Length: 80
Image 1 (cartoon, rainbow, N blue to C red):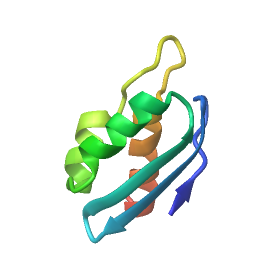
Image 2 (image 1 turned 180 degrees about the vertical axis):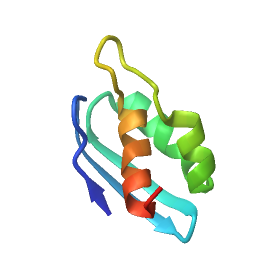
Image 3 (image 1 turned 90 degrees about the horizontal axis):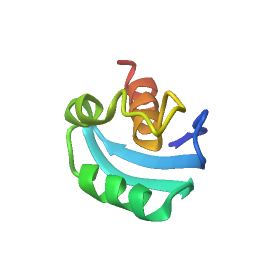
Image 4 (image 1 turned 90 degrees about the vertical axis):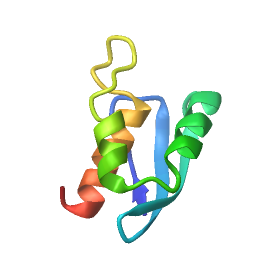
């Protein structure tokens, strides 16, 4: 699945779900180290658990972040 994040440096989030489990995540653009770290930490995690951990995280004064945008993508993909 693809998600076009809003208000962050990342231009695209690619992710794959296997039922309620996050199979893979890739951020295109943004802070490479942080994006790779977030992706690796939540791969294999239950969608609800991941959303609970990353929803609402802010990057500086932006009001959102790449992890928060991933949470929004997961919500949209799962209808939560």
